[in-house]
Amino acid sequence: MQSNDDRLNQLMEFVSSHFMFNVLSKLQAEILKENKKEALNVLSLYSKLTRIAYNICDKPSITLKQEGEFLELYLKLEKLRFSENHLKYIISGFDTVKFSLEPFTIQPFIEFAVLAGIGNAQLTIEISFDENSKEISIVSDIQNHEKIEKLLEKRKNAENILVNYKRSYEIKHEKNRYLQKIYL
Image (cartoon, rainbow, N blue to C red; front, side, top):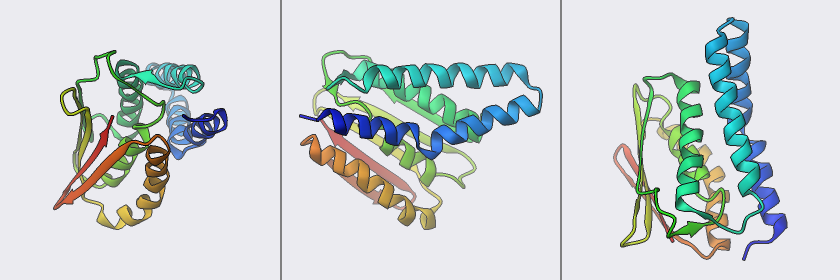
């Protein structure tokens, strides 16, 4: 079981992450360009994501459906940051309330996939949940091999969280594809 301090630390890590500051920079850029529609879109998605983050941070677990909604908003914001055509994502199997997991469990692995894929003309991330094997799979294309070593340290923190939750995981690197699996 996760302590309140652990949950607070996870929320603080998410809120203080480069991602959140990059979203605010994107918002600032749209305001400076006087692109009101895009600025409002970024602000709306950011506020929804932040609200969800605060609502789930004190819960010991959330449903996969809630996690899917959180990841959908997160990836929409990432897509806006990098450009509409650069990032494509597919989320499947997260419409169930039968399974649950701890908040902020998957997001660091998704962030790793996004950051490791920077440099691709187009990055595709597939996130799926298989009810039979109780397995969450994150598959992504990787072109930026040099950056991976730097990112591995950040992912180590996410892996430590899984160990604390007594969750098993598996990571495979095949040519230009990266597969991360988390077992519920």
